Length: 270
Image (cartoon, rainbow, N blue to C red; front, top):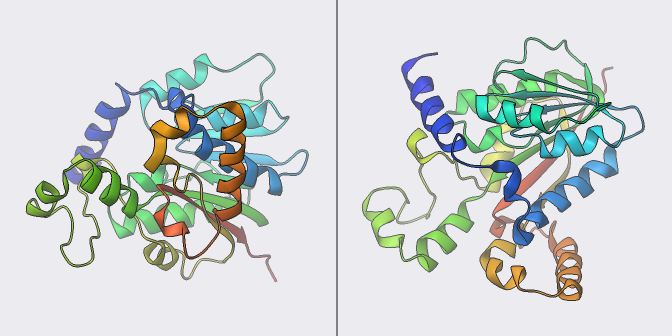
C-alpha cells in the first residue's frame, strides 16, 4: 500500500469504525435507496444465480440475497464491517466474506458470478486509475451475459443540500472544494466521498465489454426532503415510493439524485 492509498484507507477505516452502515437503511428516507436497489437486482436474478458483492459493508444486501437462496461471496476492506457481517450471518445462509479491495479481485476466476454488486467502492476511489480498475475487475469476474450493478454518490445532492441548504456553499467555494463555474465538487481522501456526474460515470465504462441496461436514481428527491419523508404516514410513503419509481430513470431528472445505480450487462463472447 503506497502513501496515498494508506492515507485513504486510514480515513475510511476511521469513518466506518464509528459508523453503522447497516443501520443507515433503517431510516425511512434511506430505505428508498435500499428498496430501489433491491427492486432492480430482483429483475435480473434467476434461481441459483451466484452473486459477488464487492465492498459489502456490514452485509445488508448480501444477507438479504442469501436468504432468498443465493450463494453470495462478499469482499470488504474495513475490519469492523467484516465483524458486523459475520455477526449477522444466520444458520444455513450461504455467504462467505473475504478481506480485500475492489481493485484486486484476483482470488476469483474470470466469469465466476452471474451478478456482481459494486455498491460502495466507487464512493471512495479517488483516482481514475483506481476507478477503472475496480470497474474492470467487477466485469472480469462476471459471466458473459451476467449483470454488474455499480452505485455512485452524485454531485448535485451535496451542492444543494449540504452546500446551499446547509449554508456551507461559500466556505466550500473558498476552500476550492467546488468549482465556481461548473459547481463540480472536488474530493480528497480525507473528504471520504467522491461525487459524480453522469457524463463521468459513462466515460469510465468506455472500452469495457458491457451494455448499459439502466441508469437510475435510487433516492432521487428523497434526501432533499428527508424530514418530510420520515414524517409521512404509511399511505403517503407508499405514494412517495410509487412516484419515485415513476421518475427514477427520467433523463431530465436523474442527475439530481443523491445516489445513482448504473446497471450493466457483460457482453456475450463470440
